[in-house]
Image (cartoon, rainbow, N blue to C red; front, side, top):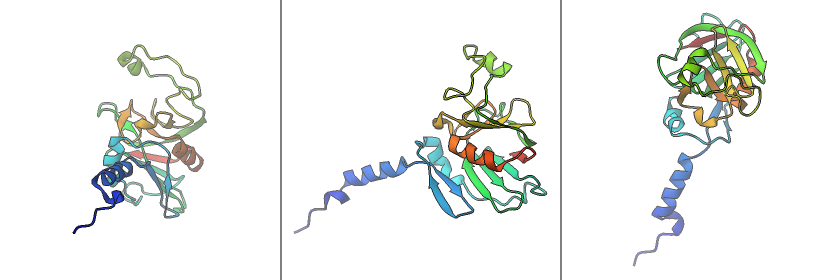
Length: 200
């Protein structure tokens, strides 16, 4: 006589548990403390497919030094890496990246300005593509730049937060690099005017 399988091991419970695991919150790595910080945002399908490509990197293949710290944005893995000048801090964050190759800019730049509560004005090309967009959005929950922004030496390019957490892990921006607001707040404290930035 065979024993009945307890309900907790039934097919239905297994499928429900698997679905819950797949829908778990996004993870941000704090490589220095070797701990994992759980974020309370929903994970999009593209983030789930992308998590396996998040891996710690060494700075040496990308920068000749860490003067003023360094930020590497990998548009393929949709990840941002930060190293402090003294190498005591290394951070790895999931990002949003530009929607198309035409909107993607790669190369070396630097942080030229740090802004809390940034204002947003769409570029002329954005308004051409989206004529119904507002010409100005002030700081607040409707601002596409989120709570903090690092302005780069390239005109119109920023590393910024977003209130729309569905964008993280996706090709969803008009050229900028987006982070969860919690992550840009942390990076904002670490980065300085003059921090090196490389987009690959």
